[in-house]
Amino acid sequence: MDSYTLNATRILVQAILTITADDRHSSSVQSVCQYIYCSFSLNDQEDNNETCHVTATKLFLPEEVRQQKNLNFILFVKYIKLYIYPLLIFMGIFGNGLSCFIMFLNVRRNGYTANLYLALLAFVDCLFLLGSALPDWISHIDNKLDIKLLSDFCCRFVYWFGNFITHLSAGLVVSITVERFIAIQYPLIAHKIHTVKRTHMVLIILITFFFLLDSRIFILVKHLNDSIHIVLTCHNDTYITYERRDILRCSLANETYKQMWVLIDFAVYNLIPFSIIITLNCLIIRRLIDAQRLRQHMFHPKNTSTKYEEQSSNRNVSDNSQIVTEKHRRLRHFRSIPATVLSPIISRRSTNQRSLRSTIKQSSVSIESSLETKIRSHYQYESSLIRQTTNINNMRLTILLLFVSCSFLILTLPAVVLNLLMSTKLQKTKSLTFKNYFSSTDDNLYSDINNYYTIARLLMIVNHSINFILYFVVGKRFRRDLKNLCLKYCRR
Image 1 (cartoon, rainbow, N blue to C red):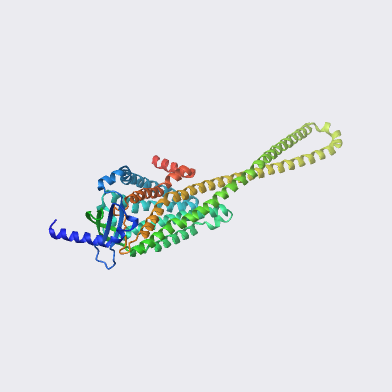
Image 2: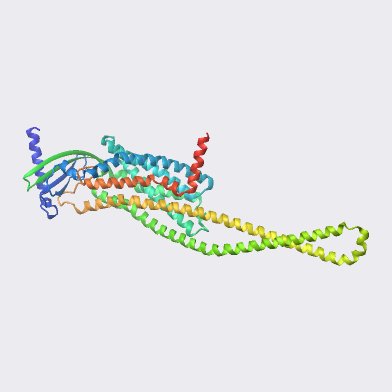
């Protein structure tokens, strides 16, 4: 380093120390050593992006020694990025593609609107894995392969696409929950409300709404080139080290817009869907429990009485059949006697024959009515069996969709809450002179938070990859359709 550069560096470090003097002497960062992070934008823009941030460290330790403290955790996070990410991504792409195909076949076969929602949800999850999770994993392998950093358009498009797909996925889960609630709460009119045509309209409205909501990303997000200056000072500025890093990043340039967008994302992706899903799921579960209790109360005593009535009816039919058979036998016997023998008896037996014919006619009518009653009872039993089978299938589908919505709640909550906490922490630690620098691309800033965010991001990928497993484990019809599909292609 020549003398001119050395003097310029000393002047810059002294300026940074002067600018952050008030922050460094505040009670919140009093310690033996302090880190000062300053960012200066290298873009030719009019907006002022100069930021400085002061953090305290209790002991002066080299970077290698400090990282040894949580080396195991860092290695664990690194292995997650390099190996677990791609495993879940490719499994999710395969599973979602297969689920989408099977659900579309079910829509064409039976026209269930829930299958249409599930088919589109699988397609959207597949797009998320291809357009957001996969580029994110590639960037972890080599930062030069990050698609967002190739150009300003790539930065805007990838950022918009990730937000649009995640918001649409949340909207689809909410739509599925609403559809199940109407089907359970209002079963008599649900088939009139949930038609394929109306489902198409709902999907078009959802896609249009989230497209317009996230379209502002194209204006707010920028491809930024920042110069990061890191100053370590200890023992009242008696020991000072300096380091500079030039960083490319894709982010919202304005801090005000960044705060606003974090709140919008929290509301759209977390708060509103969580409120609707939790409320409707509780109502659905309550309705299912009440229906199960009512079904047990109605069918157990009724089954006993119905079985007794069927046995009595069968006995009556059997007795009547025996009576008619006996009387027909007697009639054939009388007809077989010669006419010379019967002629003296005909006059005496005419009254008996008329009574016999009347009895036979009454017995025939009784048999016909008994058979009609038996057929009607059998038809009612078949209708009851069909309704019971439909209710069982409906309940299985409802349980499957409950698993889908609950997994969405559990697996997406950490990432959104962590984003909100990071944004809130930034808002509370603002400097009086400059805005604080905070960027997830800087691996020296909040490294623990970045590691936690890696795990939260992993849970998000699991959320978009796990639906195929849920369909297979919970959905009996899905397993049957998958088996038939495999057998069909194996025979070719």
